[in-house]
Length: 360
Image: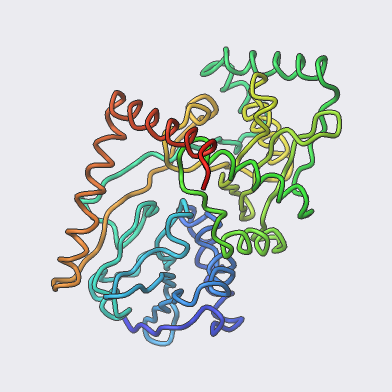
């Protein structure tokens, strides 16, 4: 195995084509966060992004995109934003993870959404479900499964949709639009949601806003930004921005206008989005790791992602362990305990309410 490092912009057309071919050859890599276009776009905005090109003799057998931070700490590209991480490689190739991170100049590589089939994966890493909407057998098959699994939710969502139209006007759904105006409306809702719930506003970072805008402008058969918005009587009610490959759409930034909250606008939107996605050839909607009520109601299957790190012996790895691992384990304990989770969520929402009314 031989590894060469490159900035994303230094990859030529042959390398990008090879990356895409390796990705499309294995279902476990069918996620737009693992597509070359995602890394290339983030690399335009963040100078910490690198790509390890893995060779076996004259042949390229893998690509490992990562961010290199001080002390040799490696993270996934756009760490904290992505729901699928890891390297894209030829099936059957043997890659030593410790040698790989050494050749990348890293002391540690940490991850929280590592996909299956990875040389980086070991038995000590924590596994987490990533719920999906399975559309491989079509929209009708999905709704039949949903009626059996979450029949009450499905029927009540349709009833609320009818009531919404009686109360406010007709519904219109714009799927896969590339207009910036509804995108900015959606991001404004998301910022308000972050503030209300006490979370950090990702869109306070200018580069993340620019990233989303650039991804929306990226439209090809194998990769695209997907923006869709549901309108009521011409007024935007709910929407979502995500990414797709040919067959997989990932959930990324869903949000809605709180004015319509009593009608369950998120569920109305997700069902509308899933129907349109199925009609456009999407076979799986990956809603991403994380416990959310709407995911439990809409899912018809699960993938698996892992959290952990690969580390070489040394002081940088030791310091990283002290700074990150106990915090990660504490967070995992809270997420696994319903009482602790409700308490933490309530505290965050109280903080969010205070933040919206206090000056500064």
